[in-house]
Length: 387
Image 1 (cartoon, rainbow, N blue to C red):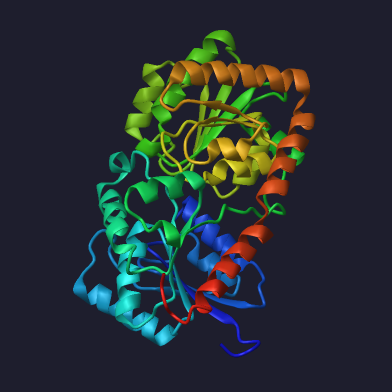
Image 2: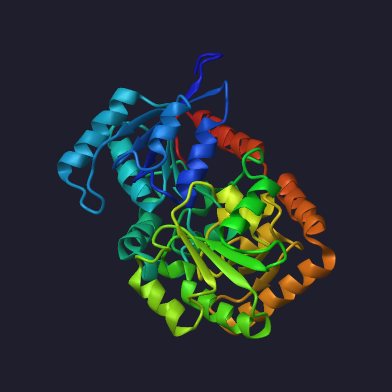
């Protein structure tokens, strides 16, 4: 490459809807970087991030594919798109884009391909059979298609090596966070609690996650019901896609365990930092994660977490949170009560400073951006030769 020439990185992703991978991609490509030019290619449509990316000056291409129905014409269109864009590096995001994008890139003559593993792989078959199939196929094709494989978490790297992914190509880059956006707002806290009919001293826990088997809302609801037996004034906020009254399975669960009146359902929201500020405690009940963004985002807003021991959740909270085994509502309830008692004794403001400092010191956005850039630069130094 010529001196002073920007590295052109084309990012391939199956869609730009709400999700952890999409939010990390957004933070990465909108970070001002004089050394890198980013282009995002969505296999589907603009989703919720497409327009925001364009508003930030990022070029976005939408291929209009139907999710789950890749045709030969779709594949040919992707290959032609890559040829026109002529990237220096192709960075793929998640299993479908890894395999499909990797094949298209290699057939188009590009060798500098980095895969993106965004899931630990645990219990993946329960969530998406197609994603599980693509993940396992990726283990076989990892020997030839990618030059590097970027994992979001150590746990993800370990499991994918067990699945046959090439360990010599693996690099772990943990997520980084824009702490100018994820910040505690006392004004938002007071406003939202007032809107929900809650006093300042009402204990409030929450979980920000879409309705998905891997998030294990069933265990959370069971644990919440047990907590109410000891702390009847406790309330719970649920935020995310399908976390609303239009979800009959969710409503049946809330009714079955007698927590419907004590639960606040918000559905999809774009003011999550404000919602985090209103919480006293965030609870991650998942049975599988990679590097759960929501845990660090809560901490950045000064909210401690109780997390299940999945992915790198325990690593994120460090000594500033509580960790329980997954799928264990009794233990989860015990830790929630323990955490709320500790918050009451220690003081919300003291804990808010401690948990935010943890994120600031360990998971800065600048650090993540620098590690991705260095990975791409190292790839280019090999002149297209994979390991």
